[in-house]
Structure formats: C-alpha cells, structure tokens
Length: 369
Image (cartoon, rainbow, N blue to C red; front, side, top):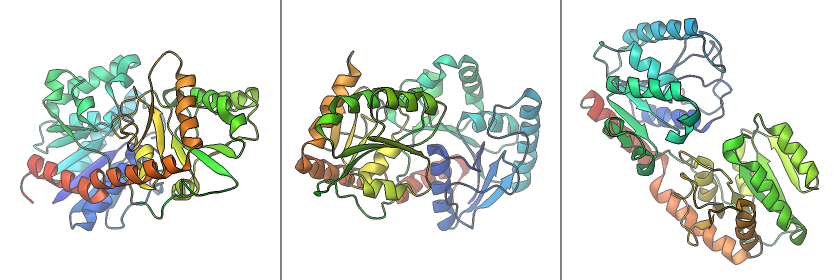
C-alpha cells in the first residue's frame, strides 16, 4: 500500500511522537508497504531516531520547523503539502500531532485522499491553547479517523470528535538487555526520563527525593532530559542540598544504557497522553513509580502488581516520598514488580502488535491492501 506520513519535524526532534512515527513507518516499510515521510524540516536533516532506509523522506524546508509558524509560512506549508502529497499519490495520508494533521487536512480537502490524524496529547493540553483546540475541532470533519492513545483520552473529547476517534497505543521499543533491580550493589540509580517542563513536575520529584535521601545514601537520582526549566531545577537541587545526589546530564541517544544501569524508575508527571518512557523502563524490567491521578501513568501501572502509584492528594511530595521509600528499601519488591511490569508491557505494546493495528486502520481508511 502507498502510505504517506507527515510530521512537523524529525531533525533533532527527541519527543515521543517522533520516535513512534519512526518506529511505525520503519515497521510498515519492512512489511513491504511503500512509505513516504514528509516534514517541514530543511533538507539534509538527520532524524534523531532510526528510520528504515526503505522509507522515503521529503523535507519541505519552509520556515523553522522548531518554532511556531507565522501566517505566511503556514499558508506556504499548506500549499506545499497539497502539491507534494498529490505528486506522491498515497492511498492514505497520516498526520502526526495536530501541528501537522490540521494543515494536512486543509491541504487535502477535496482531493479524495483520506487523511488520518494521529493525536499524541490529552485534551488538558488545550486548556491554555483555545485557538489550537478550535482548529482541531474545525479540522475534524476533514479527517477520516483520529487516533488517540487510550480510551480514557477518547471519552474526554466532544461527542462529534469522539465518533471519529480510535485507540492506537504507542509501540514500545524492544529492550536490548534487562536491568537488575534486585541485585546487590554499592551504588543504586533512581531514574527519571522526561522533558524539563511544568507538566513533568520535577520539583515534586526533587523534594520527595530530598525527604528520603539521607536514609538511603547509596542511591542517586538521575534525570535524563532537557527543557526550559533546567536552570530553575538546578537551583532547586542546590537549595535542597542534593548536588552530590542528583545528576542531570541532558538528553542521550543511548537511552537503553540508562535503563539497563538503573534500579528503579520514577515519573512525577501530572498528566501523560501515553507514558512512553514509563513503558520503556518497564520493558527493561525496572519497577516504576508514578502518581495515581496521572492519566497515561495509571493506565500502565497496576498498583502493587506491576509498579507503585502514589496517592493523589494535597501533599504530592509526601505521597511520592512514601512510595519511593517502599521501593528503595526492598530489593525483592523491586525484582517482583520489575518482572511483572515487563511481562505486562511486552504483551500489549510490542512494535509488531502496534503495526498490526496500524495496518488494519489504514486498510479501513484507504481500501484493501
């Protein structure tokens, strides 16, 4: 089948949606489908995540794909999208994230090419972005289907939008090796992988770790990621007296090394569309801790069975510190939760299974293979 996927940017982009697109497009190309990826990047850019050599890439090079587009750039992108997609002649076009599937839907209106929108965030994201939400709703009639990451996300949208939505989980990369969370060591690592911004609530994580750090001097908190709050969080580390206990090395393309070298995983987010890094940590056999009121976390972790969920309440710091202490103090618990979590994720979120789901959806949208 001739398939075209489009996303705002891939060059130097390190987000979960970019990783998912590369995984799905590579998987479909390996199955024999003719796959093209279109971006707004400048030509010659390199995808941060691996993309199969059989996938054709077209970079439109209009504006700076890492920044918000001006009106003229947006109009130019819509025109270029229509020209390029019509030239490629796909049976289905898929736009990843609203920043792409909204202009793609406008560009292909009246062409007869079905457009699938792939949403990777939750409705709460739009509370402070009313214009983006209005554009999303306005584009819906031009979309054949819209994928969302879970049923709990789907039901939070208005009914007309919900009727077009189908659940499409993110694939989780196959673990290369396994962590040893129950092993006896001289130094242990509590790992967090997340962009440094308000949604991820690293301030709560740092304060929770500070409450128990003295009792567990052989544990280090390691935060992998970068973002606008780096300076603020580094100041907080200093204020809490954690300079020798917390490391924040930035982003890495060798994330598997981080998972294998850790002993437990913690995610302090207030909400997630799909807790991709949590799922990845679990598939490496790491026991995971998150918040019970965090969508995208509470759907992956079964409290006490495949991980631990801190109770939602007024004192998030105290609640998270309590669950972290349970995990740090008990190697048998870490081993048991890690093994159970790995089995659960491997069953439901393998790349092969998710590519099967995409094939079925694209067959429905664009005709038989």
